Image (cartoon, rainbow, N blue to C red; front, side, top):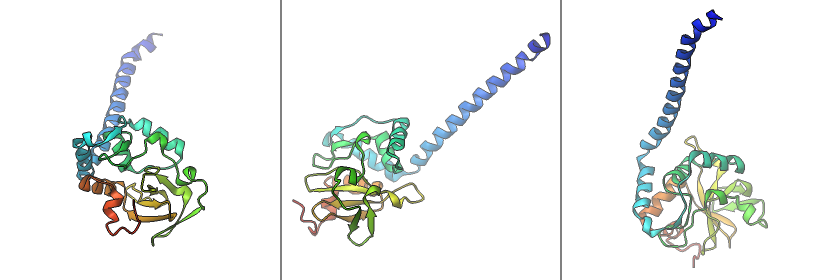
Length: 210
């Protein structure tokens, strides 16, 4: 028994060291996450603009935690682009509209695949010259707006930076248009024109938007 007590100081020191190491690891992980986005000045700038224009948006959801975001990712069984997750964390959980126009962004809890919203669609969706896509890989950034369309992620084209392209699904044509490199590019246009992204892109009125 005496020999056991002899080792108690060493056990206590070991526990303190392990607690310190765990804390250091957590801090390192958290700091690395922050550093990634600190270096991504472009994305941070768009979030800053959105926040400075906050009075021009309607019904912005509360900011989400990384845990809440990861939980929904797991339940959806789909990877969400890092730029969108950062938007949820730093700006808010979607919005009824951005810039007081019919430009919604789905809340995390309402994200869904295009085929889940419009079950009558054919399995394969044509595009305006950039391929054919399985509707099960098209996840809606917005469900639908008054123009009769929705921005969707092409989740089967994730790049090395963890981003997915976005394209505009035109409901009348049942076709995808205006492929963008990702959500960050979409935010760049939205914060620049402060209007509907699709109207800014469709300057020649190819889609016959109302």
